[in-house]
Image (cartoon, rainbow, N blue to C red; front, side, top):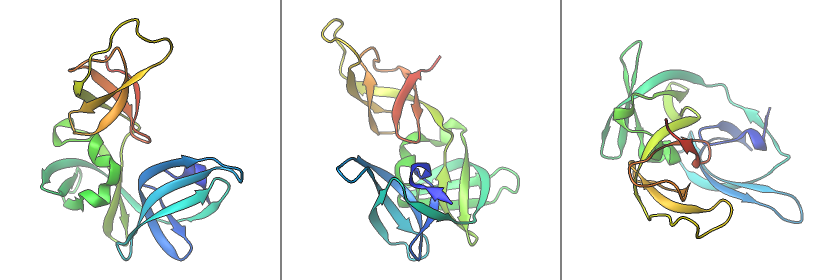
Length: 188
């Protein structure tokens, strides 16, 4: 059984009669009746995308899946091609199938990922928890203009935008948490 707190991008579970994979985390809303986790999910069988709101105490049925370690070989438009490192077979996933994960990897990274298969068809990807990216654009931070932890928007080499501390500049290599897209630390 899966609890709502265990669900993240790439998780596959049964919601009612549908088998869905999480493509994007839309946030957590708190209220009088408890917290609700908002997700964008894709039905694996029909390919339909929908938004779900899950109460934090809910339980869901696990789905048995095949998982293979692969590396991103190349990108062809909106198609991402992964290669199995043992059999050298190639599998294609669309940009929509990858969801938020497209902003954390490039073919130059030599990053090993886990591709999830459902009934012989690739349906999702699980990245390592931390990846290294380079900041390509951010405004300069002015020393002494704030107190406490303050963040500014920054664009990374893959094109996604995240919040980074003021001490980060263009060209800084940073470590990101791929589960929620947050800054972890500067890369050494």
